[in-house]
Amino acid sequence: MQTPIQSMLNLELPIIQAPMAGVQGSALAIAVSNAGGLGSLPCAMLDLEQMRQELNAIRDATDKAYNVNFFCHTPPQADANREAGWRAELAPYYAEYGIDADSIAPGARREPFSAAALDLLQDFKPAVVSFHFGLPAAELLAGVKSMGSKVFCSATTVAEAVWLEAQGIDAIIAQGVEAGGHRGMFLSDDITSQVGTFALLPQIVQAVNLPVIAAGGIADAVGVAAAIGLGAAAAQIGTAYMLCDEATTSAVHRAALQDPTAVHTALTNRFSGRPARSIVNRVMRELGPMGEVSPFPLAASAIGPLRSAAESEGLGDFSPLWSGQNASGCRAIPAAQMTRALAAKL
Image (cartoon, helix red, strand yellow):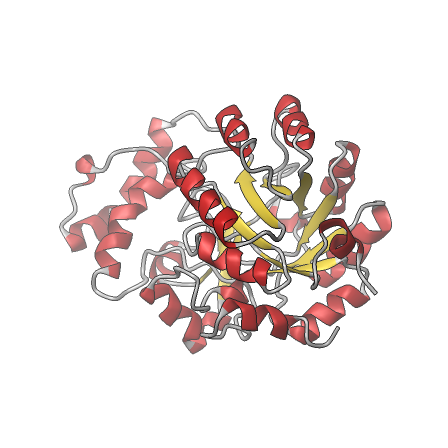
């Protein structure tokens, strides 16, 4: 029996590799797609030339379906007072590492989906284009659909799922609060609205008439089978792939994922300005996981030099150690082997 997502995309397995900006490129996506799942390429931190290179690599290496993922945030206005306050909190750490705060240039590397990105995609027409933090403007969404690409988007609440269905997308990713990385929330910034995958999934399945993909805390074949049993048309897995051979996860991040302390994660805005789940590290412990930082994605610039300095010493004290609440499935194995293992109980 095939799920609706398998039928839609001609997938052998109902396994989607979560797009993970900063810890992967095209190699992971290729390996998963060639193994029968849906590989994903995160594009939020790529410029247009990098995006084209990665998409060319995918096209050269597979004829299977793949997903291209974008953020849909509204670029913020710089807030000098908030930036000054954020840098003041970090001042003791700058002093510890001998960093001149005045030398840190403002800015951010995460870009929302744009007309230029849409124009580039016309040359590739990926099977799926997925979005995080809501959807792009109507004309951009129409452009994606006109290519024949299926549109997926993350929902963290039932209300978001219902809203997304009304916009005419093709599938909803039910992102439980256990998921690593950035929360896809977009109708509200109230963290208390965020619930677990296996509470969220059946509620969204009941509320919409679209295929629903389960994401968050799914780390092995038992979890995948449980999600399918609750009505999911596929499972999206990220953290379990982060030690795979094809991932670009840093040595510091790999070590953190394998440390017993990886069981302790929290939602934090310290690294980007928006809630995201990370393994708890020094800056989260000492300043608290949430604070008055610059708006997403501008907060990243102030902490960036501290991250680099600490990582040069083998420390993840100021690094976004993205991880879901269940890192137990992480294995240093080829991604194809991981993909097949995740589907082993279906």
